[in-house]
Image (cartoon, rainbow, N blue to C red):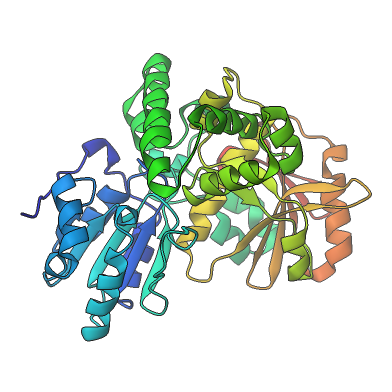
Length: 412
């Protein structure tokens, strides 16, 4: 029996990734939408695949059928399979079905883990599938605009016209602290107004993640140790990852720390931001910065009642990740740091250009705040676009030559 599930109305906001999913289904026989649980993958799949049969492997009967009779489950012409990571061997049957009949848009899969990073998944559907991430809602998605920030427009617009571009933005101003507290998961961000209700939701989400989702990915000997490590990471948002230090603070051996961090990344909770270097090999060697996919959940896990400047940085990163996931030629998102102490929060590398971004939670940025942006532009010359200094005020102004100070809410 195939069970059809109804959509949650509060999840039906337009999503940035929807257009790319539709375009991908016109090209590839398999499209895989992955992301953390409760980001709206099921709803997006049903919105895009309105003429497809939908099954969820969260249903025990369907899961048993996928494991025992996978070919029979896949016999329908076009199929959505939700939470496909729960039956990794089903991917082998999908591969056989695609090789027998290569029809574009035949399968739309969703998963609460990055299938490309899962050790239990031996079949990546290479050459048959396109993988699209779904992150928590951006601010503009929460407003019903169905998009991320103005990043594409910034790259496409001459720098001297950036002030006019940003002033024309219709997204309203809001307190970034409120945005950080509610995060971007559809239920707490869009359906729950009371802080106490959101805390209850985050508590239930954490329990489900620890007791169910993780056990489906890998054996975790101590959930208490894992949760303590999550707290330590969330308290270090925006900092360089030092696995030895984190492990020591949590009383965990380095191999366990490494494995648990990898699990957080595989399940789309932890985000590692690589360092920018002209030599791409060096990007893999330098220590990454650590962020969390959702600021609301990060604050809950860390036990923080008031957002910090690092949470504003995290909001910018999440918006950039959503934008990156909607582009066919995905941009690189990195940070920049020198041995002399110069540092820039984000460097976006796209279409042969570099966009340096510095984030300040103050409402009145100073010239000193632009120093690292100026150093970066001097070092990378014509490759670098003007620097963006995002702040919490109202004014859009050139703070220095090639450095535009702009309110964050005008950009995303």
